[in-house]
Image 1 (spheres, helix red, strand yellow):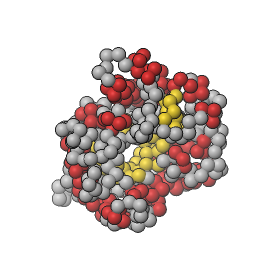
Image 2 (cartoon, helix red, strand yellow):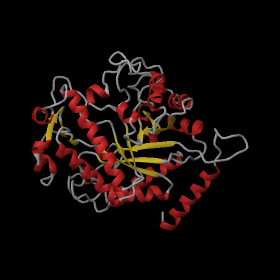
Image 3 (cartoon, helix red, strand yellow):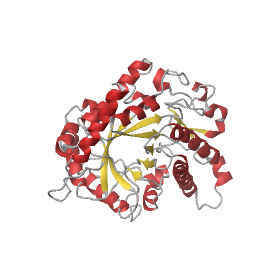
Image 4 (cartoon, one colour):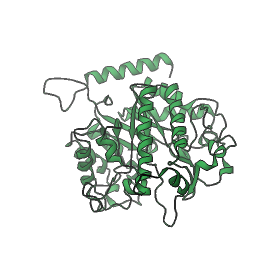
Amino acid sequence: MGRLSRRAFALAALATLATAPDASAVPGTRRAITGMRGVWLATVANRDWPSRPGMTAAEQRRELIGHLDVAVRNRLNTVIFQVRPTADALWPSPYEPWSEYLTGTQGKDPGWNPLETAVEEAHARGLELHAWFNPYRVAVHTDLTKLVASHPARRHPDWAVAYGGKLYYNPGLPEVRAFVQRAILDAVKKYPVDAVHFDDYFYPYPVAGQTFDDDEAYARYGAGFPDRAAWRRDNIDKLVRGTAACIRRTRPGTRFGISPFGVWRNAATDPLGSDTRAGVQTYDDLYADTRKWVRRNWIDYLAPQVYWNLGFAAADYAKLLPWWAEVARDTGTRLYVGEALYKAGDPAQPAAWQDPAELSRHLTLAAQYPEVKGHVFFAAKDVAADPIGAMARVVADHYRQPARPPR
């Protein structure tokens, strides 16, 4: 699509939005619908894009633009694009190597700039582009020598911790937090991204029988904390608050959002927690106090991954949704709900996920809670394939008109 036609496309889309009827509007009035309608576009392990490493630049570009066009066809308005999947980059970064998921070889120039293209092409279609960064994951293996020679983890092996078959940067080191922020802010400085986005990986998910070895960092920096868990949570708090402040200084108006695992704490652990029996609790296992971030307005939006069906015994969507709505109530943090589109039609999932209407029922329930400002779907490949028509059902039931993303 040429530049002139892209501009015309965007203007037409905005004109449609300006006159779209709002179901909540007073009868007889017309105003634009607003609400998050997002999709995650994952690049780690070539999950959504590119579909395989080593494609030509032209092939990669066509495939990326194809995902943006699918988002538009489904009347979505935001693409959350993973641009730093494993301490690497999908733009020419002075801090980290080109991602291996582009060419098959870490550090090899793909011959084009995916992040720059994604921002330009998304905006031309009336879509927001949120740049998604994984803060601490270095590699999906534990061998430092497999990283490109210039990789920061090879220059600073003391920054890295092997755990659960993967390599991570140590969140307890101030120099690591500072480096992660520099790497992220390079993209924010260079490209007009609408938001910076983190997912659910802070300290890694627990692996039975293994210990995340941060003894030395704890001995050096843990004084004054009642225990290691409190120190680790403070490390993540520092990352979140520091990143938010850096974004505001670097590009005012760019938002900061986080998508954590959907359970903060079970009520059996903490009376403030949700009526769930989840095996993982972000506060205790990932050392991420997501509730605090919302209540103290450290971030602009939260998109908890409420990836369970209505009636699921251990974590019922119908119980988690009002819990998160209560957390967000009377705060300045917008609440979007992460939806597990990838489960729809998967025979390994509970029977509820074989029903194309399951996700649509989620949105119907969420409409009862004014704190819920929209939804984000995991992920782009599943929006495109839509094997049992679950996304089509959402669009037919809830997205009949375009909507502007919340500002």
